[in-house]
Image (cartoon, rainbow, N blue to C red):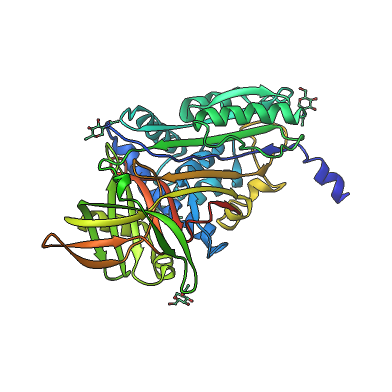
Length: 409
Ligand SMILES: *[C@@H]1O[C@H](CO)[C@@H](O)[C@H](O)[C@H]1NC(C)=O
Ligand SMILES: *[C@@H]1O[C@H](CO)[C@@H](O)[C@H](O)[C@H]1NC(C)=O
Ligand SMILES: *[C@@H]1O[C@H](CO)[C@@H](O)[C@H](O)[C@H]1NC(C)=O
Ligand SMILES: *[C@@H]1O[C@H](CO)[C@@H](O)[C@H](O)[C@H]1NC(C)=O
């Protein structure tokens, strides 16, 4: 009996996130108040998600786009009802007595449009929905997905697993400029619907590193282990700050426009920083930073991560959507549940630009008679790619070992 009732649920909604990161530049756009209202909620979600991901893998590199994940979950909430809907909104951090669902969707739309209009940077965000040919979602769900989350929709036959995964992978590859070419590795033929959320960011440093200064150097993974890295070097005026409370040195590297990478280098142990870190620290650092001559050593980075978010999100309170209790009555009268949530991201940091980061140590070095600080990201560090304009964290992560270029979790 039990098995039969489970089988009745076998219609599945396979759902997925995607995010990709690269670097380039940026321009200015107009920031709306509504977008800024999203900031607090999104940053809080970003840090909770970071803790949930990092706790499962203390000694691994971490890299993901909280914005891509929250966009996918907010889009999914369009089709959710009852307790599933409540869990989605509260898991994202929205308080329904402060902001209505309608206002939340509108704020996401404003944010996505703002990002897509920032012509100075290579930044693309959006969502896509693949629906099995035999499945007819409520038109209102499809309309709202298109209206608020700029979604493209496609009808496919998920039973033809090879053909359909090729089609989805081709779409993802186009949206990520070839950086994520095999998003789906194995497609479940029972899939009925697949929701994708992607973000592509390519930023050029406003002050590039000189490739002739890049040298082979060592990165100290821990007390016993070092790995070789290509260490870039640049000396210029940077915004920096020393946070004594967290024992961390912070530096901001700007891309063109108002996008930046904030790098946090713990003086000794990254655990303290990770445990204490709260969104208000980023705001505090930004406020207290001052411009000073500084030398920065930063390793070139190339990182691919892949996360199965099902257990991570369940831990964060998104429970029902993965079970037979799921209520997606806004999508269809058929019973649906989310069978999978996947997030992939890539990061490339080099002399011209990027995303990624590092931590530093502070030393004092004499140079041409001038004294300036040096931050050397030669041991585990954290980083954040943020938009100064909308105050959103597009990507965040931790580099523990630059030699480990692939993370599957
Ligand atoms: C939602 O906001 C209201 C009004 O500010 C507050 O009283 C309530 O405690 C909040 N609920 C949650 C779950 O934070
Ligand atoms: C998906 O559509 C195909 C026909 O295009 C159908 O044969 C298949 O049973 C459908 N899959 C599901 C899970 O309903
Ligand atoms: C980036 O900014 C620099 C200096 O502000 C400018 O010279 C360059 O054209 C910009 N690049 C892009 C792609 O906007
Ligand atoms: C970091 O410090 C904490 C407590 O201060 C300690 O428990 C932990 O073992 C340290 N980790 C490393 C990698 O040294």
